[in-house]
Length: 158
Image (tube, rainbow, N blue to C red; front, side, top):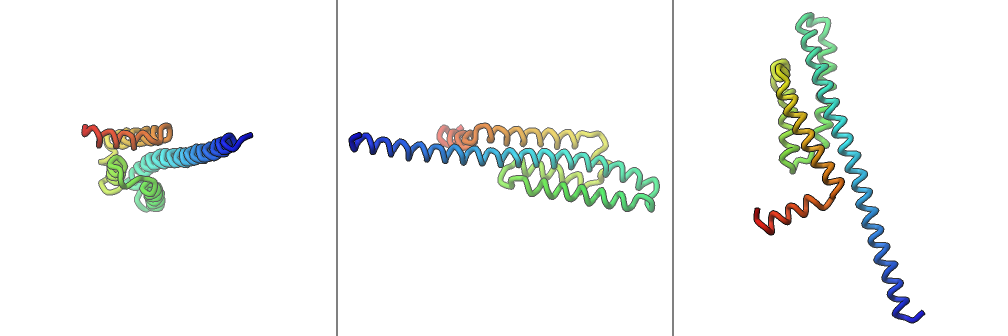
């Protein structure tokens, strides 16, 4: 084996190692991102489940406030806990995430029974959640796509 072949062999091993490390990093990031998406999806589902429990707790409370005060209080605490967990998972630099926070906070800051009356606000928040989760899943599948789209808009100007 001459010197040039040996150097080429060593270079190939080095490049292969770097590529392998890069792919391993992308896989690791994708796995963590997928776990984050799953946790966010579970928290959003838990939020709406607890929101429905809160609605029933209010109805029961209006029937007999003394009897159902503790149930109403505990349900509100559970709802706030899930809401804060969702807020911790949201990205505060993305407009859709900020909008989701605003929509979820409406359920906490406005009269609940009025907010839940016809279901349109729940549907709107769920639809927005689906858009966010779908977009995040697209990033897991194609981690460079958002950067490519941003660069393309910048370069093309559209």
